Image (cartoon, rainbow, N blue to C red):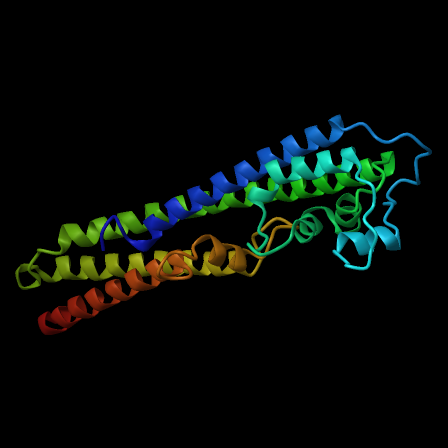
Length: 264
């Protein structure tokens, strides 16, 4: 095993993900600021949490050929443009998704339809949009915290793995034929200790995937990890590396045990 082992490469994937999430957080903050700067239309405010989206506006938003185009509202257009410039590049929407579909994912269907149909930019609509942006921002903060925990997990695992690999390298050229019984027994015990450490590392990772060690409200850790490391040759690099190293230690231990048996 070398320093380019897959668990080391996982760190680079994780850092790329953290950069992407940080960019999304910044985009959400910018969008919220721009939304707050768009003045609302005059007229009575609707009840909090309601979004003006009439059936006629709904038909216009989905591109019905029979619908009569509605007068454009510069305020909704300004919000749409702000969304396209800030949030849209950092969404998980598919490439062929329409703007309405992307806004629906980020802001809710009602808000997306209202913005697309150039509905009145009322205080209620503005408030609802800002509340949805804040919800997305909180999710992003939670994801950032989860990625930070994942970074600590990787760093601790790499420390364990590097120590074990370092010992294996240091002893790789030693001839077991020239080792005394006590030296062989010490090697056997050291390998057993390494296997125990790797087994503990694996068990802790599985508990993490099961949600036993994650704060309430975090995303499915197994799915998150699989997504972060999707470009690597293995789906779960930490577990894969630990399992491979566990097997190497086991092979070495059996070899040492065979020599011990001959000396007994």
